[in-house]
Image 1 (tube, rainbow, N blue to C red):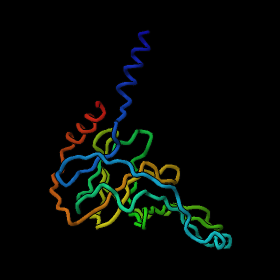
Image 2: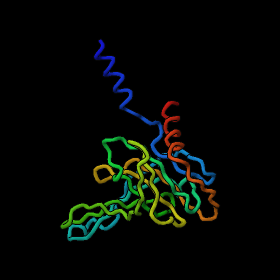
Image 3: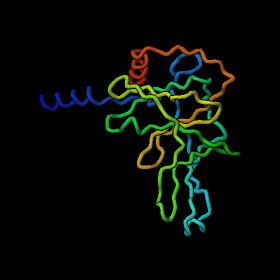
Image 4: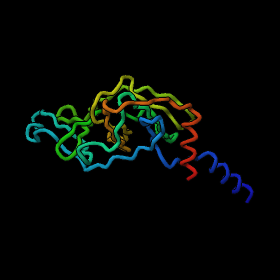
Length: 193
């Protein structure tokens, strides 16, 4: 019985399960949870007949809606992510998405008869800083321009855990980057609620 209690206590202290995975610094310099994007399926672009003769097909993930609900001001793209120890922080990617009439498209794979399927994401380079064991700060190396973007984790060659947002330069950022202990406290607060 004693061993069971000790193992149970060890498991509780070593396994941290945060209620929210991604936060962003909003225009008011507050951490705001980012909700996952709603996906509407996948789409194959290209001519299937030509692909049999070496032509390329592109696979795109469809995101619901013409634009993201979360709007960030120019330069306010500071994300804070909780990622379990068994998932590499390098699996997180930032990319632009193309707006269409009813939805947005994230092209993530290119395939051909002779080349097979390859990842084909127009990635934006990231600065990654470790804040604690499982919590990281992620921000683009260059300022994002006006447009639609997604932050996501690649899992076996397919985008997973997709968070969408748009950047609008007409919003004025009032950025004060929070201290690391305040970021960690926000994750802890949501873990306990």
